[in-house]
Image (tube, rainbow, N blue to C red; front, top):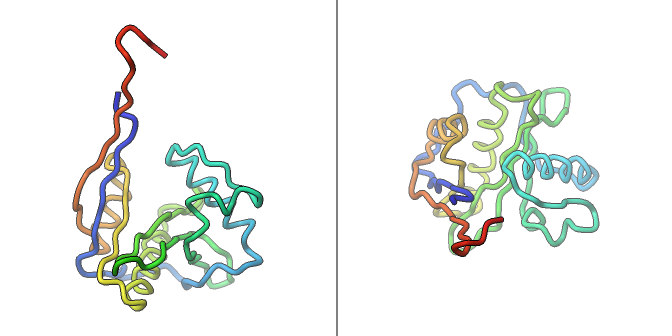
Amino acid sequence: MRSWGARLHRLGTLTPPRRPPAGRGRAVGEREHGQLMRWCREFAADVGEAVTIDTESWAGTRFAEKRYTFWETPDGTPVSLAGANPLVGGQVRIDPVYTPAGQRGRGYAAAVTAEVTRAALAAGAAEVVLFTDPANRTSNALYRRLGYLPLADFCAYDFTRAGRHP
């Protein structure tokens, strides 16, 4: 049985949104760590990850080593989030990109992804990559518009021994 799938995308030429939403990208501050953890928990749940994220477990999660950027509205309200892994071997991986359900469809994810992509390139990344769920047409189309090109699909399978059923 197939247990998960992922599509790897690599940036070709960054094409920022023509009409980004009002607001700006900015680094997530230390005082906002509670909101950051909450949104990372929500992202993990949305993508089917069984990840416990709280103050005690944060350092042991895949979310701890990243730099995060919020997209905020003109009044300073964060509405979307993107993380960037550290530059390794000339490459930065964007992960996660999350917008709470009530804020979706307004261009915030595109704006924050363009912002962290620009920052990665400015920091010296020769390649910027990200993964998507191949079945999520919305995110795949969004990243394509920003200049990310599909590179490879991955999947994992769960096997059970013959005669043994869960």
